[in-house]
Image 1 (cartoon, rainbow over the protein chains, first blue to last red):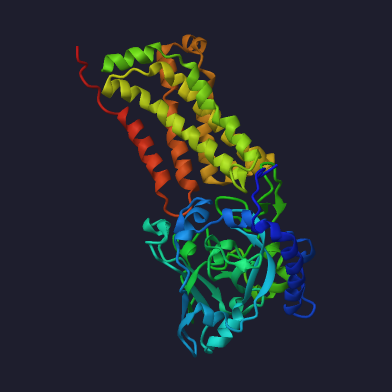
Image 2: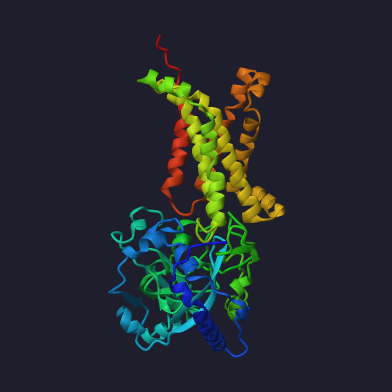
Length: 296
Length: 199
């Protein structure tokens, strides 16, 4: 029903990529630990390349869903470096190639649940964030990891108006950052990360709402206090620091109980949203004893 | 100049406003069903219908200031503008309820629980009696003064619609605020003291 005209493109390589990434997903699930399983991992059918690269929230390029795919090409991603600092043993500016050197890149098929109640399944390529943190040496007092997106108004037209306070900021608790499901993604479908998806390197935290998975990262800081995060700064009642996917805690303006898979067309149904986006078995224990209603 | 415009406007039929105005309803629906509105056509359709509804409401509000301040009489087209706006907003509501939320109980829960939806719904409720009394017969039945008083509900509806638009935005977005400012300006013009009419 959708997209009657299709030019041959990257989406045509999907079947093989899907096949390969399924195997790697299983490997990823095993890495999570003995007895761990990625919930419903067998039935994750990734969204098409076109869905994933044409329907984005990346306000640095505009607030429309199609704006990032139209304007993100204006961003220069080479050279690229990440300033890693704060409570680390080896602070400094790390070039992209330097970061990737020797990093084991895997394919991980993850559910992606936007706080706006839409979702996709995305075959990322990336490495576990903990590997990078181990490399720079996290000092004992560090409790949180803070991230920042590139802020370059001449290449990011959305940042020329104060839609949100720039640069975009996100953060994780250290145990969340060290969790094996948390990755730094550098590609999709086996290809380099498209700019609109956060090239060249972004965070992916699959059990949290999508806005936590900060894009085009230029700064990582290890800190001992909960860092400021953009949406929490703008609307603290609507977006908490944790922002774990939770069907029982509604956004003040809409229900989080269900979601719609992008790509289903005009008559797509809604599906129930899963606790921790389906990764409950892997991550719930990090929040044991926490009031998830208060710490939304 | 003014006379020429008014003479032309007098000669134009009003049906093209209905035909051209309403055409985007099926056209956008068709685009949505065939992939022309992107990978998430439900939200896209919902937003397009809603915004067009607000735009037609604002266009309707321009009619009397145009006459008052520019001497241009487009009053013949105002009913069509209002009814087209009503159709878009009804379509917006239908897409939201049927294609987006997909459950009557959740629709009701949202209306009761979510202020921006409560406000949008109140705006729609204001428009229903206006659409229902849009015929010549209804005007005669109510009588001019009562009809005019009732139709001041338009100001409330436009205000609620613009506030609804502002409230659904994420972050600090300029466009909804511009609509709100235009709506406030157009309603505010009604409050200006009447000028002495020129003979």
